[in-house]
Amino acid sequence: MIVTEAEWTQPHSDCAHPERWHATDPQSTELEVTELVAAFVRALQPDYVVETGTCVGNTAEAIGRALQANGQGRLVSLEIDPNLVERARARCEGLPVEIVQAPSMQWEPQEPIGFAFFDSLVGLRIQELERYRPWLASGTIVGFHDTAPHHGYGHALERINWIRTIRLRTPRGVTFAEVL
Image (cartoon, rainbow, N blue to C red; front, side):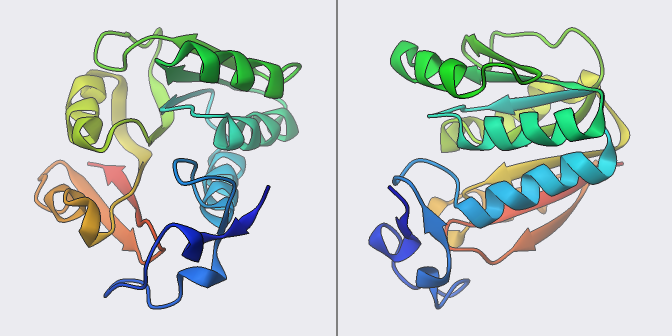
């Protein structure tokens, strides 16, 4: 069921109108942000995409559809909850998407990452960026969900000297960065 994001997020300094966004549950990415992530994939044409924190697969499905429209590329999406893994696998069947049940801090990419979306546990996202740095070439775009001030880590991204960030003021916050 799709509802207004105001069901879960109160107005705050970065987003006075969370009711303008929509979500299926309190953990999944806002649908409008998911569309933006898929648009990045569509526009950038990456061969290898990594997502952490699959949840029910909303964003994984959107990325998979973008890759399918591109005519190349594949997504590996990581999730630790076995029930969510099965739901996401069913949702992404037939798309160039592999849902892997593995902790993001233990899994290792198989090739250079062309686009990444970090959306696992909030406390791990900067650690994930550091972990995957060897697979992120200069110019690679990465995204981070839940970067609004109330999540507590978004401004720390701006202090990392090997990425250039742009923070978008959505209800939960999303930041995109270019690897320098």
